[in-house]
Every structure is written in structure tokens, then in C-alpha cells.
View (cartoon, one colour):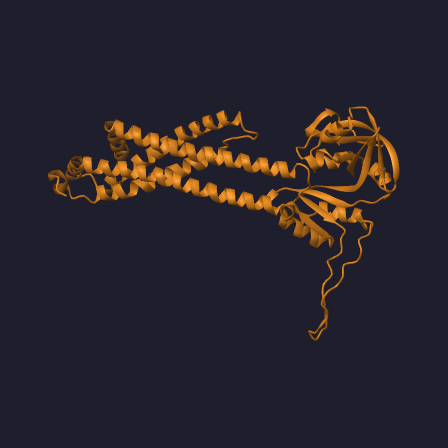
Length: 397
């Protein structure tokens, strides 16, 4: 424990230097914690806004795209194959496909969905809509509409629908009000029992959510669906899970990552920028610790020489300065994490997303600060340990 006692004594005697470097480490760690928590909040907010109205994976009963025909001998027979005209095609054996999707590792929940276009009519007002039909219990595990209801309740049923807030405003609809839905298969009257707001104008202004059977009747597709939507356990592993789903079902499985390439590019650029900021912040902290300890070594040459002459081993001197770096790193980490949480809490009041410093961020900051302190103290510590006792006492260079 001699090395620890010497480290505490040296830090206590140089209170001004210790306070300054501790303040520098605290500010550096606070910046690290604050930036990390803020960027995580921005990322979670962006992903939540994007995925708030779409499934992680959509399974479609689509044939493989046409491929050029090649003769077994390698001769190209047909260079271009014309895509056939689009037509409404039933989802073949979707119940079996649903079972296979649900049994795929990584899939958390799945929901058969039928969606189609239509026209909402109320009085003289008309609005293009998208009729979405699904089992209410299954659908809420894919898109949490009940958590985003602003009025009414989650009870889509035979003649009951839940609509977006923008659509309700444009048509002057309120709870309990009727409206008519017209599609290519016919027309029916329904009643509004809930109004939601998912934060997307395309969804809030067009979606009319009802039961699967009602949607099948409105769209003239009895017993049919248009897709099987699913959520996954690991959000950023959606591509891998989609590949497994496609292999199991033989159908086209499209992940949210494939649909949102621009978002992934933005998240990647943001992550790289955050990493650069962290690196430069930690370098500033390390240089501050190293410079102060290097000055300490010069100032205490005589004391170090006396200690060596009294029989204190070189590794004890080495451990003394390493302890100083570790103590500065730990102290700065604790104070910096608290300061980062305080600043994040103040900023959280004016930004539209959460800034939360989780246990993992705090432990990461502590570990990085400790390692930075030890790394920064290594060079001054080795310099002190290698000093010749007689030369150090005389003050020779």
C-alpha cells in the first residue's frame, strides 16, 4: 500500500495541479457521456419515427423477378424478359407461411395484414385512404397504435374503424361519427371508434384500420391477405432474419433496413462523427493527465531520489504514478458522469427525444477514463522509476 499512500500524498500536496487536472478530466468525461447519451437519443428517436408505422419485416407472395434465359452451353437465348402486367393475385397458403414465419429464429411476432386503396366519403368531402385490416391483438405487436391513440379506444371491428388524426381533421370526423368507404369492390358505412397519431403525415392522413374480415369484405378479397408483417428481437439484425424467413417460406421477405437505406446512411455518418468526437475528447483528457504528471516528476526529483536511496524499489515509484493516473481517472469519471447527466437532463426539456445515461454508458465512461488515466500516467511513471537516486538528489538532468 506504500505506492497508494505516496500517490495520495503527492496529489494532496499539489492541490492546485490536482484540482485543475481533475476538472479537465471531469469536463472531458462529461462531454463523452453527454454526447453518447444525446446521439443514442437521436438514433432511437429517428428509428422510432421511421418504424412507428411499419413492420420490421414484410413477407410478400411475389414471384422472383424475370431472369435472362441462358442455354446450357452458355449461349444467351433471351437477353431481356418483359415483366408481365401486374394483377391482383391471392396470397397462396398464407396460413402455412405464417406458421413458418413465426417459427423463424429472431422473429418476435407476426401478423397477417390486408391493405388496399379506397376513398373515404363524408358529406361533400372525399379523401384517398389506405384500408388496413388485421387482427387487433396481433397488429398492436407490430405497430403499437393503441399507445398512440389521442381519442377513443382500440376496437376495430365489423363496422368500426380507427383512423389517423390528419384524416379526421380533413374530413371533420369525431368519435362515433359515420363515414363511407368506397373501393373498387363496393361501398360500406363504418363508424369511427378511435383516432391515432403516429407522427407520419402519410399514415395519419390516409390509414383507416379495421379488422381483417372487414377489410377483406371492403376490398373484395375474402379469406385473403396482402402481406405477413413481423417484428424482430434485434432491430439491426432484420436483414439476417429476413434472409432466414425467405429461406423458410420461399417468399420475398423485405426488411426495414432495405426500405430505409437513407436512414441507415445517416445513422452510419452520425456514428462515425460521434466516434471522432469521442476520440479527440479522450486525447485531450490523456494529454492533460500526462502533462501534469510529467511536471510532477520534475518537481519531485529530489523526493523520488531520497525514496530510492532509502530502499524504495523502482516498481513502487512506478506504481505511485500509475495510482495517481488511476485516481484522477476514477474521480473524473464519477464527477464527469454526474455532470453529463445533469446537462443531459437540462437539455432533455427542450428537445423532442430522451437523453438518458444508462448503466452501460456510465460503466463505459468509467472504464475508458480509468484506462486513459493509466495510459497517460505510464510515460511519467516509467521516467520516475528509471531515475538514478544520486542524480535525482543532486538535481542533475
